[in-house]
Length: 62
Ligand SMILES: [Zn+2]
Image 1 (cartoon, rainbow, N blue to C red):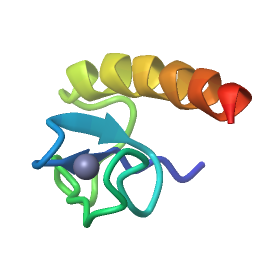
Image 2 (cartoon, rainbow, N blue to C red):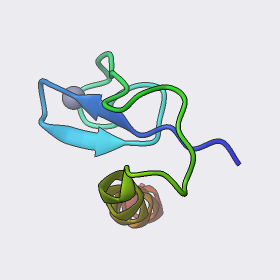
Image 3 (spheres, rainbow, N blue to C red):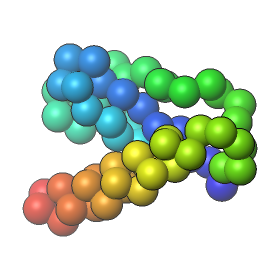
Image 4 (tube, rainbow, N blue to C red):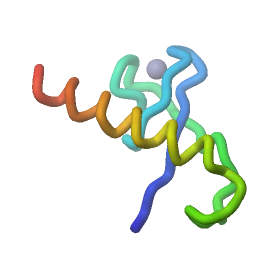
């Protein structure tokens, strides 16, 4: 499972998309590239779950 959380500094927003869904700008990966779901980055797990939901809701609107 590939899941890389990305962050747009301009919009202060997390997304799973390659570019920011708000401003179409570049996004960065806010966590280490290599880490498993079992390690200490539990907060990113939680964050990603929320971002996933948010992205889905927004794509329904469009
Ligand atoms: Zn943005």
